[in-house]
Length: 152
Image (cartoon, rainbow, N blue to C red; front, top):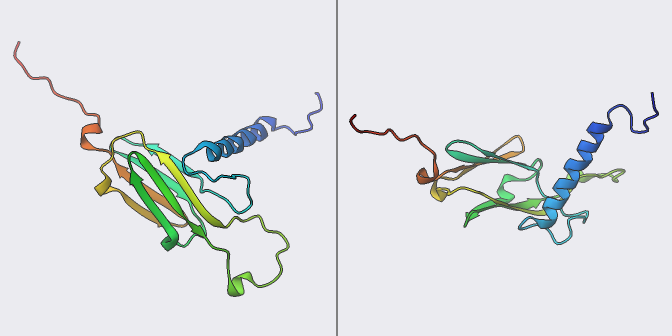
C-alpha cells in the first residue's frame, strides 16, 4: 500500500478544503460582502437556503449574537441579514486570552432570492443560535396543477 501523508481520508479532507474555499469566494463576490474577507474582525454567518413548494426558508448560524442586534430586510429580490456580534464584557471577559479563535464585529450577508416573494408575510425567528427566515412565495409564482375542463 502506498504511503499517504494525509491519512486514509484524503477525500474528506479535500472536501472540507473545497467547502471552505467556496465560502471564501462567496464572501469575496457576494453582494454585501466585506471589502477584506480575510480580516480577523470580519465574519459572516453560514447560511442554508431551501426552496420549498410554497416558500423559501433561509437559516443562518448566529450563535452568541444578541437577537436585538440583528436586522433582516428584503428588497428587490435580495434578502439582507446584518448585525453585530459583541465581545463578552465584565466577568465573562476576565482574564488573559490564551487562545481566541472566535470572531466578533459587524456582519452583513445579502442573498439573492430567485422567486417572487410576498414581503408582507416574511417572518423571522431565532432559536438556539439559528436564525430562520421564512419567505412565502407569491401565489402567482407557486406552481400548481390546473384541471382541464371540457366535453368529449
